[in-house]
Image 1 (cartoon, one colour):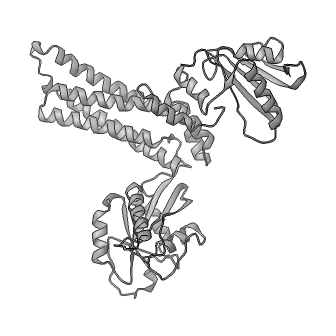
Image 2: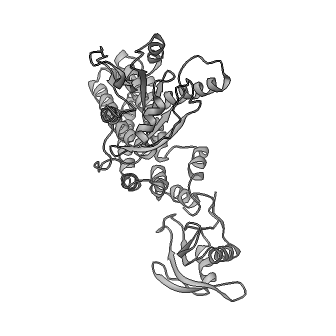
Image 3: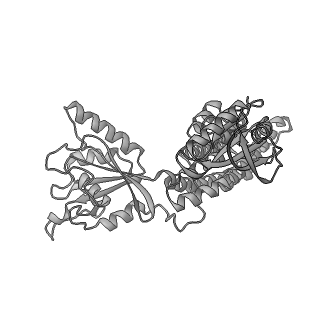
Length: 444
């Protein structure tokens, strides 16, 4: 779709700097470069050149690099112009490059061409953006592991496993007249179980990578005046939220980003959960439930003085047990001999008692990314695709256990293979590609 187009963009950030870089890629890149310099450019060499305007004046001078396709980032002929980093100079150079036959590149178009030309897969392309946007050294290292293909390698191994299973089952279907009952073959069950285990392992690693990229999402929930905003302030280390004795003070979701035990965390303070007649408070409660449903961890706060109520129990019944931490706040106001719930934690957001134990409970299933050298960066779409692939393999296993027809198993495995291929881009839609690359910066 772009075989005859040459693109160009300023690849360095806006502003004044020592150097500025313009990238050019496409079939006319070499012609654009030689016309701009009015001199031949050798491939693979760094050369000092003058950059000439249409009227013969010198626009600037600097370095010029020529990468002959397919030995370039995009897989096409590429020119990289390193000039002085003034915005006016770079704008004049880019304008001249476009006069010579290039057009302005779309956001992410260089990376998109690298993907479409087979230089990188889709997971690696996304890792480029993640590397640029990484907010910590741990995230940067993990993004580089993904860019180097470690995540993609694990996905390809799984795809090969699924393809081998599909080939065995579909071959048995094709030769059904041979009266070979492949459903009696115990190897099928073992191989399905191995595939499921490998998916579970990769899914767990991808969840860690997603958490490193997006941050662990922790929602503070509870009835009004349970102390959610006070706890947010204690964790944040400053008064991020308004705290009063008036119920329903928090009307919207308040988010704070922080690091707990080396793990990036987003704490979401939500509106108190109750039946509300006020339309503004009711909307805040609706948003609170939406935040709770998508959270990695839900910290449910109970006022220790009032104790757990029927309203608390009704809400807790709706929360996911594996992601919910029951916490009694205002424990400093309890008598020493007060009865305590052995299945809950007791803290004081005001005095800080029990806060370290709570942080341990929040982060207990996450790794210290600063110490883990195996984590690669993953996105939510990768995690979702792995979950769907695992569900398909589980469905194939259930069909095998029930003695169902091989056609059902083959279709389940085909779905699993399709989901895995969407991660690396072997099977994907143009709409998905458009959404992914549109979020890249210009010039990358």
